[in-house]
Image 1 (cartoon, one colour):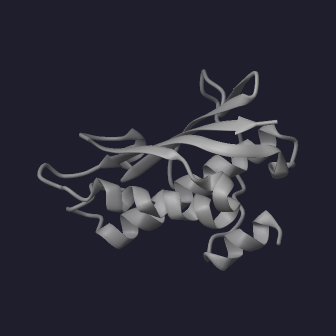
Image 2 (spheres, rainbow, N blue to C red):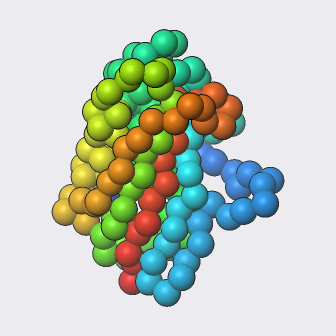
Length: 153
């Protein structure tokens, strides 16, 4: 089954993103490791959700935002691998940053949105080490941002 079909099964369209005019790259490859810069829940030029989890954003919306972040990670990874995601050996590390109110405790549950997405799309190769942590704010006031370290061939 194609990677795009796996996205569709989860109700997420294949991302259509342009490289932002920022002083860093969406991906950097060092040997057989690709580092994917932090991704926010963008759909094209639009941001899918803004606000703090526990205030303007509920848990289900934050989990969906985390899935979108993971989808955008895959988009940039696909670009770095010239469209050949079969070259992914394994996701090594995923970090999920959650913009939440003080006292929020379900960071792992938010992070599960991204982790479960990667497991669905890549199977065993999508299993990873992970850190999900709270932030006092994130760019564009998004509820979630995620970055990844991926072993490739």
